[in-house]
Image (cartoon, rainbow, N blue to C red; front, side, top):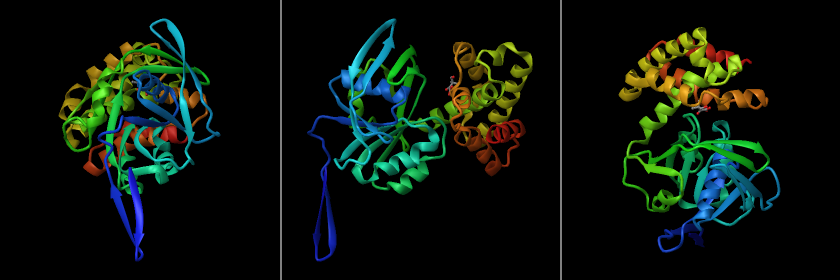
Length: 314
Ligand code: KPL
């Protein structure tokens, strides 16, 4: 917690880390991944509160299907505009919403608050650090497969792995210990940046094509003209990755992209879902980030650039 006092006009802030208090979490972004984590944390007895921006706080009754069984859980919620302090925040919004979402709870963030960004794409972390310079920032990436069936109704279709780490290599944070017992596979990594880049690369290879051709992921392997485009995207991504120092992605992207396509053949990518629902897409934080990096590094990425423009102007 933090407390502020004023002495002759000088504001003094004292900060005490909550090392002796039970962990509690707020979750910003009540979509599929946010609700999956809200459920898992609550099930472990960890006080977890969804932060709702659009509506007055109510107590959502979550329905979740998992391993063929459906169950309900009452979740706690709070409006973003409330005043009580947030010391641990998991952000699971869309990439284009991260900065404004964190801005909406900026007044509630404790000095040194732990903030975990579990969001697709790259390119928002610097802006977050600018608007909230006092927080401790972590990033995460997940392959959990969960989709929405209706309001507060989700299906956990495929178990994945969630990698979590600090932007500068460090041992697991103190709050991470209970995350190892959530019934979700959460792993700490000392090198989150290559993991985030690898996820970005996979999304660049799959998402724009599925959105443009309005097809399931699997069509990118079964339709030869699309498979050829995936290969071209991957060779461009490999060159950018090599120039950016992400050797593992540079060496494996084509193999890894086709493996994900095969494993998620029946899925509609998140970008296709956004397109079909007439929502904004995350293209600027996925292909847009890759193309910006390619430009900085002087590497050509013509097909990625073309798809970026196509999606932007769709
Ligand atoms: O992450 C994904 C997405 O849809 O955003 C993939 C891996 C492409 C699975 O659909």
